[in-house]
Length: 202
Image 1 (tube, rainbow, N blue to C red):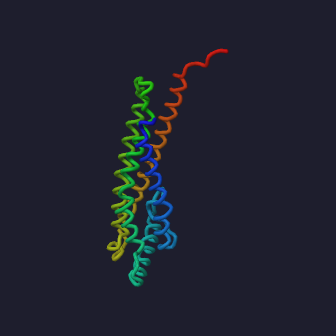
Image 2: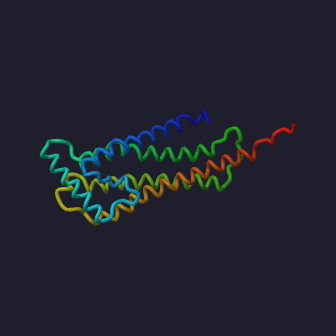
Image 3: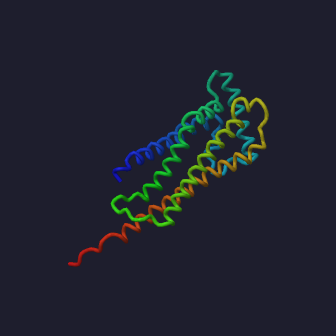
């Protein structure tokens, strides 16, 4: 496991970035729009009624921000996607793949990996990259719906369902990947116990 320390460090950095976005940046944006959560935070996203309310909250804050000469919630939301949330999805994708790989990495016992474990590893990779695509496309769709230029007109209601699907897909794929990773680690623990020599009789 000592050989894998760069990967574990990456996982810690990824978790720290997620905590920073979830506990600092997202609440700061929510505070400007009357406490409403940004779409990224909702497991199933906003329905049409919720999207309309969010659009109105972003629009009202934009007008107030322009009058006071401050950054609006909409601008902060786009900045989040162009900054930390541009870096986070690839980091999480790599971290998920690494955690699955680490469960199979056993140089002290280089036996052939069972087919089911290898399939599990492949599924984790597939889910991780699907998550990556969902997150990036979700951010682009959200920006086109709630960005400052979009707020000059009416809400693009055709994108509401698309955004919900992408948000739900993002969470579903990442959660399933974590479940599979946990299963791989359980397999690793069980196989190590089976391979351990029996205790000497006294």
